[in-house]
Length: 203
Image 1 (tube, rainbow, N blue to C red):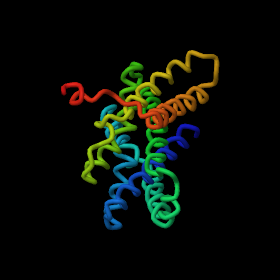
Image 2: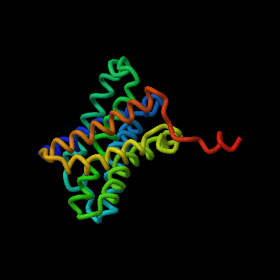
Image 3: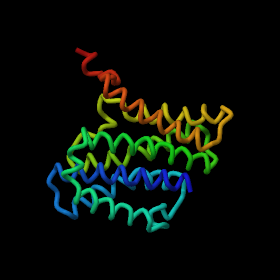
Image 4: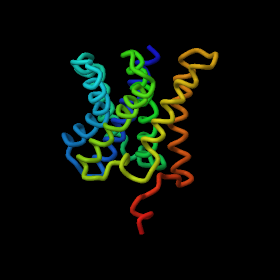
C-alpha cells in the first residue's frame, strides 16, 4: 500500500506538471490531457517494457488513467491558484522525479536486477515522461540541459541502497531516498549548481 501511494502521488505530480506546460503552450483540452498523460505514464511505460512487464501497469490497472483524468480536471479548474505557487511547474516536476525514481528502483529490485541497473531503471522512470512532454511542447528536455536533473535521480537511487544497509525499516530508507532526490534538485537550482557545458569549455 505504501509503494502504491508513492506511485499515485508521482502520477499526480507529473500530470500537474504536464498540464502546466501544455497550458503555457495554449494547447486545447485534448492536447492538455495528452501532454499530462504522457508526462505521468511515459517513464513508467518505458520501464515496464524494459523489464518485460506487459501489458504495462496503466493498462492493467485503470486507477492510473482515472488519476490522470481527475488531476487534469483539478489542475485546469485551479490553474490560477497553481500559478500563485512560486515556480509551480518546477515544484511538481521535482516532486515527481523524487517519487518516480524510487518507484523505478523498487521495480528493478522486484525484478532481481543489480543495484546499478535498478538505479538506471529509476532514472528512466523519473525522467522520460518529462522528456516526452518537452519534445511534444517543442522544448529542449530538462534532462539534456545544464541543470542537475538525472544526476539527482542517480544519487538518490544509490542512496536507497545505502540506507538499506542501516538498521531501519525499509519504508524509512525508501522515503529518505525520495527526500535526497528532491533536496539535491532544489539545492542545485537554488545555488545554480550544474554540470559543465562542453561548449563553454571549448571556447
